Amino acid sequence: MVDFPQARIWLYRLLFLGISGLIIFFHLLPLRTTPGAWPGPDLLQAFAYAFVLRRPEYVPLLLIASVMFIADMLFQRPPGLQAALVVIASEFLRRRHHLMRDLPFLAEWGIVAALLIALTLAQRLILVLFLVPRPALGPTLIQLAITIAVYPLVVVITRHIFGVRMATPAERDAVRIGT
Image 1: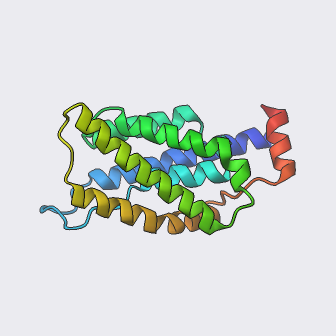
Image 2 (image 1 turned 60 degrees about the vertical axis):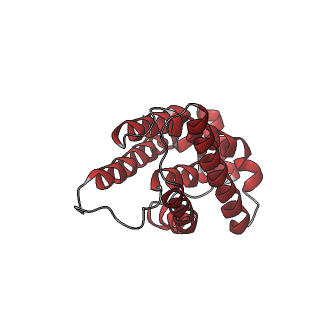
């Protein structure tokens, strides 16, 4: 017999993996031959946080860590640094998602923005401490601002297109009983 709550969880895990794969694919696709003036948003982080805040069981720690580590390797970033920081931030959000369920969206957006700022500062600090060449500050700040600005659109996409919404109390109980 098919266990529908577990099947749904695995379906959304595959959806997150597919979204991440598409983001990585289009990021690596050579659409321009000259460097752009504006860096794009970090959609991997935005989707990870949107999924974690709505349904944390859809994106387990290992899935986020592996996707971010693969992105680190493919984007030629310091291996594991961004992955570790995103895992820390996603676990911070995962532990507090039940508290944030009743907050208005602006509060959620502010918390995610604060996390993105903290992660950017932590990453730059770690790179400085270990004497690793770091990207220029200007494009990094532009990417941070664009990622913060795009987060509401990511939430709308995850909610209305992919159907990732906050769990009702009955759904939360069914997941607890099933796992």
